[in-house]
View (cartoon, one colour):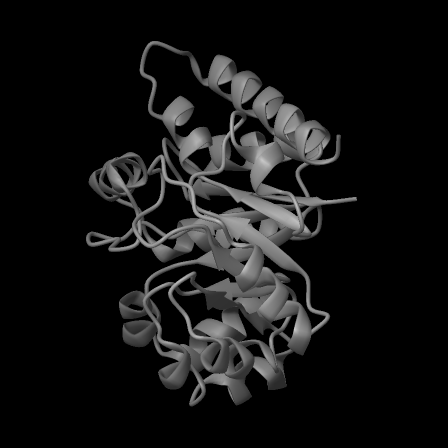
Length: 246
């Protein structure tokens, strides 16, 4: 069965909401949650997720919120931290890894940490038993793909197109997927631009999808109550999970 990873901006509008939302999504088929750590310059993200980041920061997001949410969720659903490198660097990469390990977090997704620079930190992740997720883009050469995926852990994050999250783009990734499969049996999950309209097509030939902006659009809809947002996002999770496996 193909997996569904859901990105949720951490602690917006508050920590308990994030916990309740993710547990409701799990009931509808969510396999893993990507807890997005609010950051002022989310360079890989489009305007929807950027807006959610800014709102969370304006509400006073602190790392202790991430810890409390992770402590509640990790025993119930596979939990990853998605964040830009700057906050981890300032906290201390090793300290951040140990904090994640103590809370039961299974992996880190750091979109602005290049593969070559990540190599220096990979032993710390491996020693803690936590995956540092590798990215493959459609612009990568066959030689670079082979290098990136040979030691990939947990899953490979296949970027659906060159650009930012939430854009309505489409590229033929069959050659890239074939190249990945030559070198590893690590599952391949596709992200960027995945929603209820594109999920079925994008899920072809991969092992899972990563969905963010489609959920965050609902999260930002101020016409909805908290419970309405949770219900709507959870139902969308179930719909996408069904579509990718139909």
